[in-house]
Every structure is written in structure tokens, then in C-alpha cells.
Image (cartoon, rainbow, N blue to C red):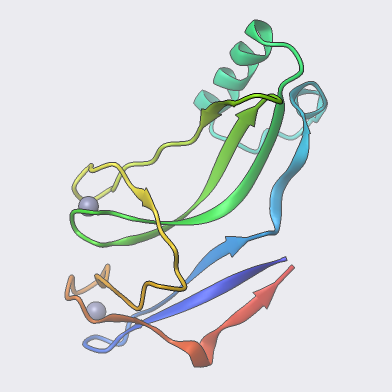
Length: 138
Ligand SMILES: [Zn+2]
Ligand SMILES: [Zn+2]
């Protein structure tokens, strides 16, 4: 279960949904279990990194959820599947993303507080939450 947050540009009318989940792309499970799956869900670089970490650390867990990120520089929004690899003590690996426009490091954002962002089409700061289009997905 998660939420799809709609944004609509008041200038050019462009509309996009951003997913944020309690819905798991990968349910919390051991990395060993995950590597036993036939499907490779992630980019091969991420996958290879997980394989490497699993060799170096015992009892690793993995989970992946959809999170919404913002570029602190140009204020474009992104939804990304954040992969987290962790053990009982600490986070070993967490996905990092970069803005495809300016290459800045993206920041996790709280969509509930974010009412305005940059429209990816016309690049104006007229990209607003559209509460009427809010959807639930599972
Ligand atoms: Zn626009
Ligand atoms: Zn940017």
C-alpha cells in the first residue's frame, strides 16, 4: 500500500504522479533470501553491490520502498525505489540518486509539506499538489 501524489503545472497543464509507499517493492527480508530470487529487481550495479556486501557481512537485511526526492538546486521531483541494506546495528547501504538535469544529489522530501516544485516540462515553479487527483495503490 502506498500513495500516489499528483502534481499539476498551473502554467502548462503537465500532470505527473509520484509514488511513495509503505508499499514495499521488496519486503524486508534477508539478503540471502533476496539473492535466491530469480528476479533481479534492481540495476545491475546495485545488484552487484548487494552481492559484494553479502560476502563481507553476515545477517544482512534488505528492503526497498518508493520515496519521493527533490533536487535542492532546481527543485525537480523524482520518485525512486530506495534500496536499503542493513543489519541489526546500522545501515550498510542506502541508494543515492542524482538529478538528471543538474547532477546535484537528491534529497528525500516530505511530500506532505511540499506544495510546490518545478515543472519538469516548462521549468516554471508552478508545479502544485493536486489533491483532487490523489490516489491509493496497492
Ligand atoms: Zn509546466
Ligand atoms: Zn537539479
